Each structure stands twice: as C-alpha cells, then as structure tokens.
Image 1 (cartoon, helix red, strand yellow):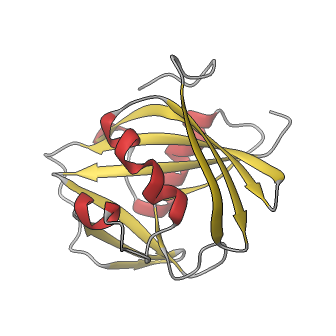
Image 2: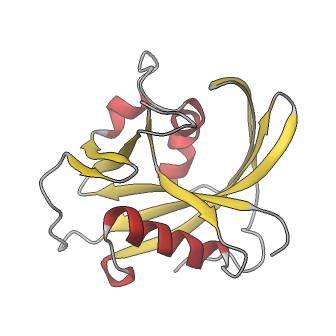
Length: 170
C-alpha cells in the first residue's frame, strides 16, 4: 500500500450501535465509529480487524465484517485519504461489558440507531450520521465529503456495485 488509508466500522450489537466519543482531534467530543489508520503492511480488512481489537477487545470470531464502501475524505477541497467503511455485526451470543467504558481513545457506549440518525443530533460526527442509513442497509456506496474544520460542507453518496479488489466481506 503506497497511500495512507483509514478505516471506520459501524458496529451493531443486538439492535444497538457501539460508538466512541473521541477525546482527541479530529472530532474530539463527538460520537463516531471505531477506526483508525491502516498500516502500510495491512489490507483494509486486516487493518479494520486490528483497530477493532485495539479499541474494543473484539476478536475476529466474535463478529462478522462486511465492506460497505469508502469515503473520499477532503478538508477544504484537498484530498486527505480514503476511509474504508465496514459494517460489523457482533454475534448475539457475545457478552459485552457494561457500558460506558473508558479506553485510551475515549468512551465507548451503546446507542439506539434512531438516536444516532436523528436530524437534530449534533453530538455525532456529520459524515457518520449521513452514511448510517445506507451502511446499516448493507448497501455499497462511495461517499464524497469535504470538511472545513470539523464542519461537513459537502456530502454525496454514489452507489457502487462491488467493493474494491481485496475488500470483500468476511
């Protein structure tokens, strides 16, 4: 991999979403999915699996993972990096800890999907909120976003027919 990539998971568990309130920029103080940088020697899938383990303790046998597209992330019109998007379903037999849980990146908490998608909810990262309906449906999309500071100033969803090579579901 030559270009920096990021990854982001939308995590479902028994009808709820597991979100992270970040303590560091970008988007400090806002709820977001779990994710981070894909290392140069990782595939998008292995990078996502590593981030899931580091940030939640989840092991690969505890969830299913489906690539649902990517975000072309821009700041002030300048491309930053693609963000590979994954829909993660934690198996219903898995027992999670009682939330909220503090960890090095912030606080993990379960929420109802309706709360995360509410139009008047300003406590969630704007592009996550915008992609949730299609991500939760499992629909493949490429999303184009542009931010000024932490404010999303452009968003477009473009349906695609298949994930990029090497990014199939597990």
